[in-house]
Length: 206
Image (cartoon, rainbow, N blue to C red; front, side, top):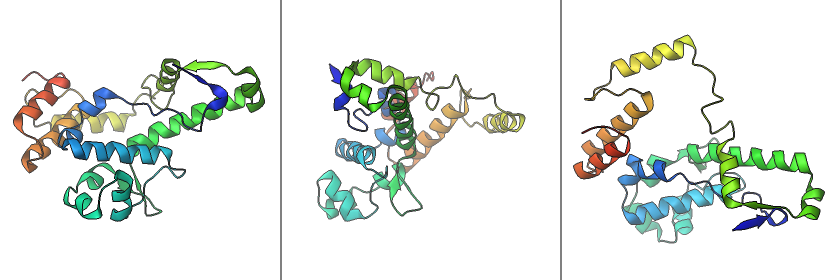
């Protein structure tokens, strides 16, 4: 499938990372219904001009298409996955970063080619090419990251030295994920079978 550039809305595609979705303890702790609500709220944040969703429970319930009571009874999604902004709304931090990267890419394309040229040339860009381009942006890649400063490296070593896991984690991200998984297990949001599947996804030998 290809998209005509002249027909693009501001953000025609939401990049989705299946491994991150499957490997998230928060997502795995949700019911199928909660996952659909969570994804619906992510889509609402993506399309919203302010890049956020309302904080009021009745408005959130309306976005996912259920009653306020039903949404409240299933609670926890908003608290675990969104943070309140200074303006009193809610925002998922990771999606906000991806949205900023997409806006930067589209703005750069408009600046390079010019809106008039886009309308006259009617060039086509495949969905795969667009997704690949977004993933190469400096906002989302590690290759352009600066080398860690001495105090950051020291903090990393200190964090990993206190790793409670066996086998010991080699990266801060893995250790953080496993600590979050431990908390989900302790709170009863995950069972041991789900935890083992996540560990295998992360490459941890059980």
